[in-house]
Image 1 (cartoon, rainbow, N blue to C red):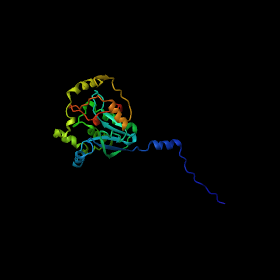
Image 2 (spheres, rainbow, N blue to C red):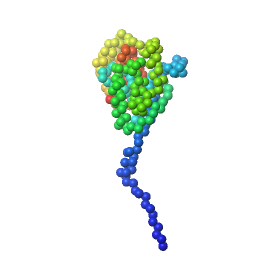
Image 3 (cartoon, helix red, strand yellow):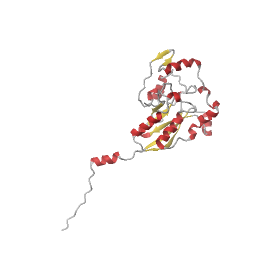
Image 4 (cartoon, helix red, strand yellow):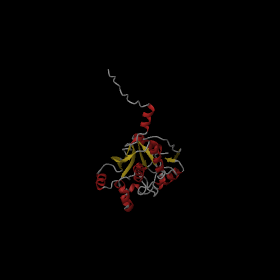
Length: 247
């Protein structure tokens, strides 16, 4: 009587399974969220179709569930880079247009944070310039650092036109009113002036903001007069909400 033999499947230990999982390649989408700085209407629609809209962008690292952007402030030696929940920019000041897939990163979370921190060092709040060093310049630089590809040129075409044709820049973004100068100087010393009274320095907290929280954070900082390095008053969308600043 022939005896049958059964082949046993090799047993994988728990440690080997864990090792296999830990060495699995990381993969995360790098996306660019695009917002229109102009309110919905004939002008914004015309500029969009002409390929020269006034845009704000943020770079989304999907695995971190964060959208990074660059804005201006007047705190010396501090980055202007901050992060919010993806797609949750304040809808009262910008209009969401689209989300563009820029590429794929295979870096683990620790390295993703390190790249963001390194790039952020080159984008300080006081160095923000609407035409030559704006949120779209930052988005493109961070995108290239993570994927090897820069953001599409059309996302920042309006700034290039503005360098050659200054009148293309909205009038409200040009210059600083005289009564605002004193507030600016006070803020440079780390203070905010509201109604002639000096408030205590705004504390920085590592918090992910979005939607109403982001709007509230910016409004709590009302009284901050923020201008770019050429003296233009920045629209609210291009200022850094200090509560979400990268540290």
